[in-house]
Length: 328
Image (cartoon, rainbow, N blue to C red; front, side, top):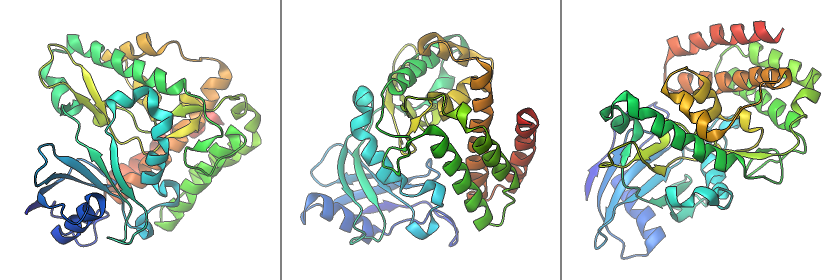
């Protein structure tokens, strides 16, 4: 087999499989005769290990995604792959854009980690393709992204919190629990979590503002350019695929990462709102957005720590301080 892993330090968060392990996974998924002829690890993901695998006798490549060992997972990011798998029926509105799951295994009998095999999506990652178009064409892309987000956010769920659970009866409970889990994860890696805990306390004190959200909409969790595929030949940016929907939640759509990114700059992305629709600008919504920003910044702090980005970790404290000043 032509095996091309990504070279990493022995203590890196992501740990590659061996060629033998990939063979075992393929035989588990497709039977004893399945023979991988190539496996190329894609280095674009920052959480799961991702491989483009070609099997003998099969023209189309497959995508194998392998979760970190459970001991390496933060409690605020526990079993994300299982959450993505549970989200598939809820994401039916965008099924034509998503890869199909061909096999999944949570038993840990083969390699000791969760793994999932999906179909390979055609196209080019948006960060690589979008820049080939003139900036005057970029609003077309962001309008499409807005329409996708709107269609997902309109789906209503049975509880608040991660799609696969645990589920909560109120939005405030889901948000406060998430903040507390992020704070505990920060403690676990030796980072100061006082700012996150302060906001969790503020949210608990004013939980009624959070509980004005009375319908749990479906949140994509991580939808933005990095998780979008574009047509390789189209005359204007055309979204053909959406990837990595493993952080889906039920709750206030305004808490979605997608909304944060759509608001981050006043550039071509303002076209997002033309398709998505008007956002709530009430004082209560503005207050909730500050709480959501703390949750985002806490998650970013953990990710930057995981990636060894010390300067990026430090920057989150300044950003958090600014949010705290607006909340107080």
